[in-house]
Length: 152
Image 1 (cartoon, helix red, strand yellow):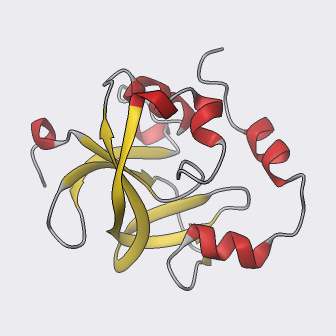
Image 2 (tube, rainbow, N blue to C red; image 1 turned 45 degrees about the vertical axis):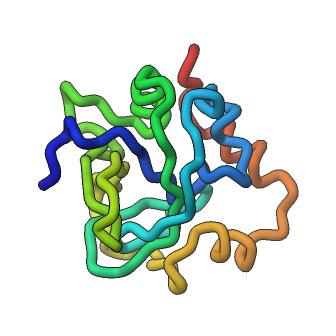
């Protein structure tokens, strides 16, 4: 397990990726800076409006961001339903992990619920999966209405 002091980056593999409006909704777009596309180890599941990454041995498409303002972590923790004081009750766990190529260590939010019966995303890319899956223009309105407001 990497040292958390080495985690000055964060990985987004789902709705927080640059092409989606979620960074604006959460209020972190100016608090993080896109470094490059990357791959992270895991298994990606379709949870409906958003994905869940479980530990695993597949390479999942993601984006690596530099934390410009560490206060972004508190907003992201709230959005991802991660409570460091109650990890067992959290939907996601934030952990420092190595990228698949070993080049960097970054914070990654791992899904903290059973994955039995969930749909594994073939191709290991949320964006590609979403493009194949949805045609509903109300997707983002519905998605953002389901997630907690990080500033409220």
